[in-house]
Image 1 (cartoon, one colour):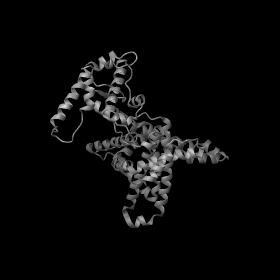
Image 2 (tube, helix red, strand yellow):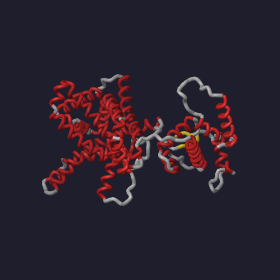
Image 3 (cartoon, helix red, strand yellow):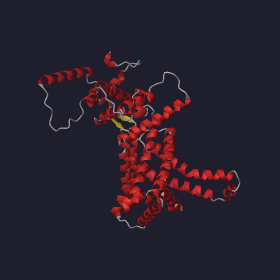
Image 4 (cartoon, helix red, strand yellow):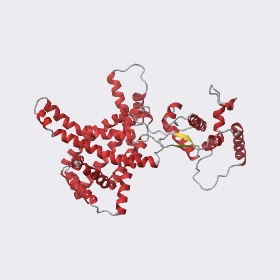
Length: 444
């Protein structure tokens, strides 16, 4: 297996010595994506997060649907959501209809005011937790080490819960009304318009699914996702979801052994597996969107970078310099992505250093995920930056380590020498003394 893996990496990711034919380039690109996705699935993280989303779905599906039905009833389009629920459970066959009927009856009971205050609060919490869980999974896929602020998350979660179902319901209503319009019915009797309209009608549900997936990939990750990358993931996941649905429906229809083994639990097992498969496809699409925007990670994956002490110090100083310059010039603070681009390092490499600086109170994230100084720059010493990177950490035990006397003396001497070099200079003084050519005042 190691030999096969080495051969695949050489063939897929090594630069060719001569231009390759088009079919080889296409095959190579497809192979790179398949290799990366298979590696990610075998690591187990995507599957574990899909399982976690299944559990969250079981808790939140009823309050989410109750909330959506309440919105839809105000516009008189709630029946469209019911039809979509039946389509969603279609791969389960006749049992899918039974499950959907049970869910709709439960939702009607919730809308009828059966819940008390405590239960209602719990249902609202589970609905918000559902969106939060999806965002956390997307942030994991996009290798985002920082999350949105609490106020921003609540605002955007409420927007998703309000606008998402409403937009989907309006789209379904428009599709249904257009299909039943007199002019459309008459045009459908004229060939080849009739065949074309039938094909469009069968394609529209998949277009709607791809649109929903694209919206999630664009909106939920706490990162700047390009529309092309989100659309790439949406198309791939929509195709996978439609294909998996057809295959799963065929499996349910012909699987007599499953019913014999699980008996009355067969329906529940099938429903859980279909939920798991759907969430896994959604995460796979997010992974494809990430690789479409960051193809350099196709080979790296989630390889954790190992940074030297010198590299961490330079990163920290570079971050503080860029943040201080932007703040002093009344310019918007740099984002993690812009810093990573300017320094020419992956964003994942910056996360640990940024977290140390934030924990030391040297930087902070704003509402729009940009960076600003953590305190007044005239009170922020360069020694603080150095200490924030070198001194902060956790040994894992409550007692202090016991150093040998020669080691302690040498370490103290090194620390004193570093302090003398930094000479209590503040970040503001450092920025003041930077020469027009960008040379460091500490070297003059």
